[in-house]
View 1 (cartoon, rainbow, N blue to C red):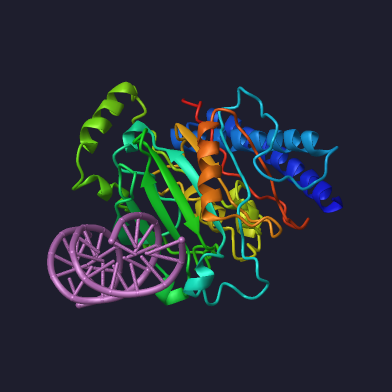
View 2: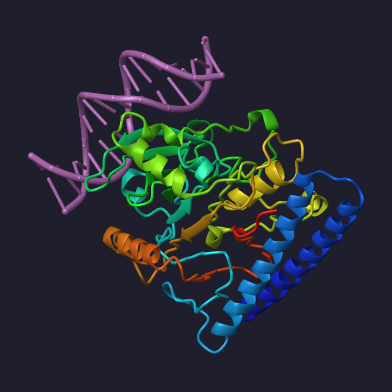
Amino acid sequence: MEDHRRWEQSTLTNELLQGMEAARKLMAEFRTESSVETRDLQVQRILSSYEKALLILKWNASNSNTNSLPKGPVLPSLPPESPISVNVSPFRDDVDGDHPELKPDSKKRKMMPTWMEQLKSSSDNALEGPQDDGFSWRKYGQKDILGAKYPRSYYRCTFRKTQNCWATKQIQRSDEDPSVFDITYRGRHTCSLGNNAPKSPDQQEKKHNYGSDIRPHEPLQEGLVKFRNNLSVDTDNLKNEEMANPFAFLSTSSGYMTPAESYSLPSLALENDPFWGNLSQTDLLSPNTPESHYLPSLSFNMVEFHGLKNQPCSESDITEIISANTSASNSPILDFNFPIDPAQIDPNFPFHTPGFFP
DNA sequence: CAAATTTGACCGAG
DNA sequence: CTCGGTCAAATTTG
């Protein structure tokens, strides 16, 4: 409780400060003749910071009187004008108190933290599938799923062998909207990527073949083409970078910080700040990155399962939650469920600003 | 050549 | 048996 307050306080302050900082930089950059990308980056940061701050405030307000433990997809409304649609709902985590990371035996596999996100590619990427999420995955299977139109792809962390990282994910194209991908993550990253370890750029993998499921299958093309037509695309320079951020597990405090800040941070490699660790360092911090791809996606919707110990869910529960969320994706819901310790300041939600087009 | 993907076989759960 | 998930040999990629 107290922890929460302190956490909120510092996060809020932090976000606002960052927003201000970014705004200043932006101003400076407008004077000089800086690149569009740099400006975008700054704007991105500003928006992100303010959004986070707002969310925190919202959440705080709606939660101040009730108990601090939210359960389920309950969060009162966010500002309706908010372009973001984030939905976080608890699911499960490692429940047994032992050391799960070490041996995710087939049995325990089910007990791994699992969460799901649903994201929509911009029309540019509609055929490609979701963009790189900052990790490197190796596809190990593909299955046709019973009532589903599109096959499901199975990925595991590239470093499973070398670093004993057992994170996996599944990607499945949505039936009704081919540009929407349901991504289910399972297990945390324990690899260097997940640990926010500095990583040589050349090691950074970029190409993902999510689109491969489009190949030997049937009328996909036609549906996609149609979709393309429906969406006017002028978003040429817009690369959609989504970020699945299981922030309930997050522990570090990097993220949308200024490069200086990020670098100076000790970057506590606590199991789970995979996303922000990577993104902030590899993507955000290096203007020389060929692709500047953290521009807003058209829509982003994440469902996160975090597992309350006293509230075990079954697989069927999951799907229920998911579909529920899916259908309600227009009403942004946020359910923070942080077992966070106050020292961890900046969980850095992957909020985007889909409405923003320069 | 190594590393990533493809794809049918395999396996366990139900 | 079916289904979803994984394995692993063959193939592709770079």
